[in-house]
Image (cartoon, rainbow, N blue to C red):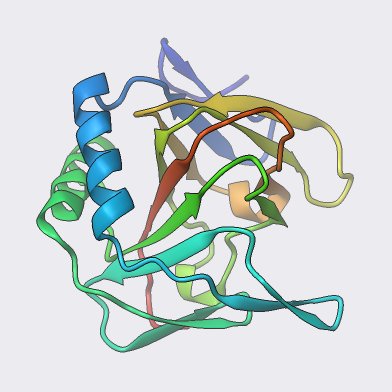
Length: 203
């Protein structure tokens, strides 16, 4: 039986984890305001990564904010941590209240068009702890988001992340499932994603 946050928000995963979508967590007006603010005022960077032995630029822009000091390393990257701004703190407070948890960092991703993407991965860095609770917020154009079983590579579960939606991932999700935001040839506009998490220590 699938776990439920409530009757309107079922678990999207068939087993071993919990992923729940809240399609209209933020109102259209709130979402428009946040998107415009983050697009213009976040300290976006395009970082290099090593794939198959070759250094390439990430196919998206990123930034890291939080109340942890110094730098944080993940997936071979070391990022400087920026201080929260007021709009970020507003969103953080609303999420913490709704999901009865706390966050000390947020990874921002800016997908400029359909060519920008995120490959298959798990958010299972040691600094996140054994079973991290991660909340992903979407502003901007709708994009397809996918889960698949980490070992079997099946089934593939696809969902749409709309403007103002929130995706909650918890329990064993990062152990048994990997996820991605695939590229698309469809004419889509920019999307900004905020991934709130609790770092137990710096990576």
